[in-house]
Length: 95
Image 1 (cartoon, rainbow, N blue to C red):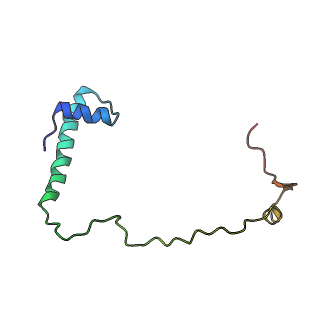
Image 2: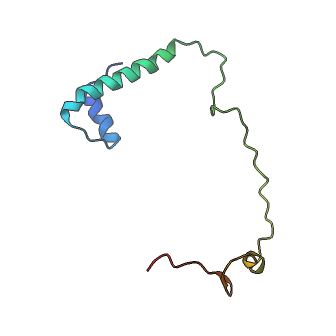
Image 3: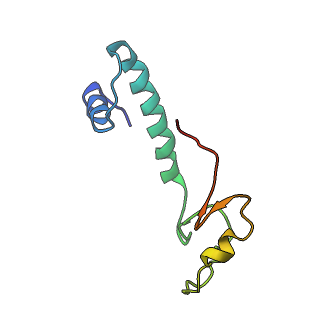
């Protein structure tokens, strides 16, 4: 598939790209090569081939989403190096 200047400018506008006019020929050539390569995929027989949802064979093991009691203030602050009533004390970051 060949890309012309008008198509390239439309794609560039949609992608919010801005490039100099002298780079246009190189961009047209690059896009044409990419589209030619993708077009070769039509030569493959994909009859009966299931589409992939991802490339990995692993299956996500998700835990059941259940509400559980949260950590209390006292227990959360138990191992804090410094605390001030109900809060962690940390070094000042901003002046």
